[in-house]
Length: 237
Image (cartoon, rainbow, N blue to C red; front, side, top):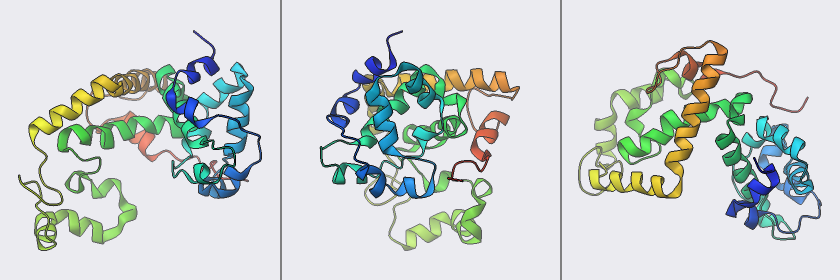
């Protein structure tokens, strides 16, 4: 395998995101994630820019690269025109391809996102379909959310939505041909391959952890583990 720095350089986001960092720290100063998590985009860019293969691998295996919210605040402030969030995107993709994402708690959650948000795109044409969210899995939303789910059609139709029906309007049913086109876009751009990599490496990790893993759906031990896991070690001490 090539060095990780060389692999990152093959990602256009890395090429566009890291041009001439002078390690000033403005990105960290403006970063919302840095305020709440043990996260410092300045250090990430500095480490990647060093080209140290061992240190980059540690980063690929860590929780750190999953804290970024991709808000792009760093891009708006960098005096050199860098975009640390693009660098993080490239790191995340490489972590998924190599399977290193399964070595961190936040990284393993990529499996949960793929099985929910990712697969919703193909099933419904939406990343988040209101009627596909389970109140039991999102207790933090409270009783109002549960009421909305139970009375979805009545509530949204009163608000002017065209829920799960053909035609125009919010929450409309996305035509089959449009969803098939989405699948083709994923195949051409490498998204399908990335989804397959997440599945493959997650299954291996489930075996390693001794947890049940099903080839589809969310009713299995591994999904529930990665969905709920929180070691409370993600904020600065």
